Image (cartoon, rainbow, N blue to C red; front, side, top):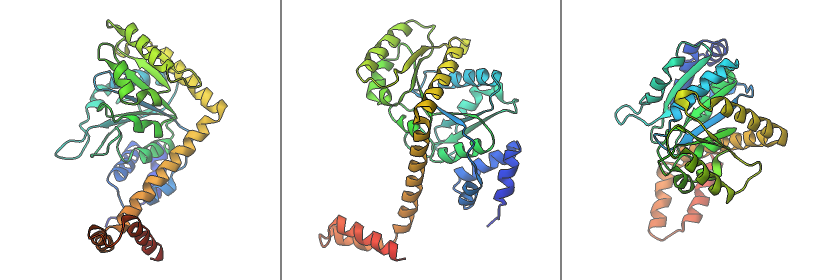
Length: 310
């Protein structure tokens, strides 16, 4: 086993060493034994986390690239986690998103990382929460998380973002699809991208009518953009700032971050428990349940009791 000086690695990442930052995220993705030590070293700095989700083909990556440009012009240091579908051969990210964001590769204050889903459902990679923490610790004040875009499994992003953008496009039936996919419940801001195409106003109107049936406070904004031309991007950045101010003033920002930390703890605890209970004790109890000699609730209680004794 190779010993890793996690303290030195985190310190180097904080000092702006991109290789150290990339190494940290790679260790997290690979489930390294150093992961607990890495997480203990990280300190939160209050980065704003913006989730970007929507169906394939709506222009999420182009919109993300346009947001990076606008945010950098305003002096923000921007980290991007672009979730790509896994390669069926290597389980690595396909890297399509990074190709579309190549205009920013030479900017030292922009870091773009593609992460593979590796079979994880919900539009994100399993290591996304930890990668967000690494970027926050490294001083990126704005972190954009773009989901994989697989259709109706994108709702997990709301558990990891302060603000969630739902991106739609005209002519794709996205108003109806948003209802089906549960996206009306998760969006803080809705973006009809490719708004220079026919049907943008119709899509916006359909979306507004759908949102009216599920009112929330505050009223959620719907914006029109054509990201490839830069149209509507400044208005979107202003809307993001308004939503951030609203969250901070209402106390919801702190609440969302506590919810996010709670979910992360729950997932880690569940994963550890699953790893611990696998093996002969579980198989023995399963055989009893299968034979009708014990019910599954009693078996579960007994298994947990045995784990507590250890």
